[in-house]
Image (cartoon, rainbow, N blue to C red; front, side, top):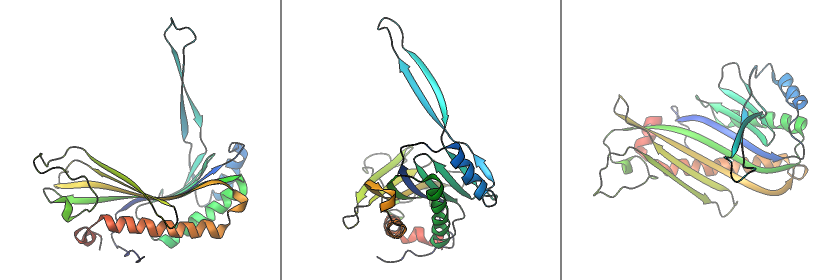
Length: 251
């Protein structure tokens, strides 16, 4: 598989490396506190995401149902001083996020590996269920152009219909027969802006599911060899979705 070109003006808004896990016990406040204490120098900021829960009950068929809304703290997100990197520790897994400007795979994956080893040491997840990459790209197209000159993955509107689109969302998921990893493409078009440009969000995901794989049986070499393969698939999807006209904007 050919190596993706390194673009000086890469369109990456956010890169996420995600490892989903399963444990018999929830992420404790003590474990979260230890992670915060050990990474305070690199990730001094802290955000507390909450999981919203809805409960609807009808105890008597003759009466209106009652509803309750509650929120539950769901792990924590530690943020670097410049706000460009996040270390997320959740009951169901770990994520490392890098916001624009994205640097390169080596620095991104090296930091993710360091943080994952810390999460694994402190939280001690029992099962690993998924390894995944998610890259969100923003591409600007000139207004009034033929989309096929710029993108190779989009919804084709019959020529008999108006070609000025207000909503355009396209999604497809595929399986790599060799690795059984999944690849997902989501393309969304926004409204034309003041500069007569059409913002296009190209979200590329590559992920590998595991079934009942005990954490102790998944070696570090396997984890990062899998991520290297997922990166290759992510690059293949991205390059397959764009044309040389788009690439020129990134160079």
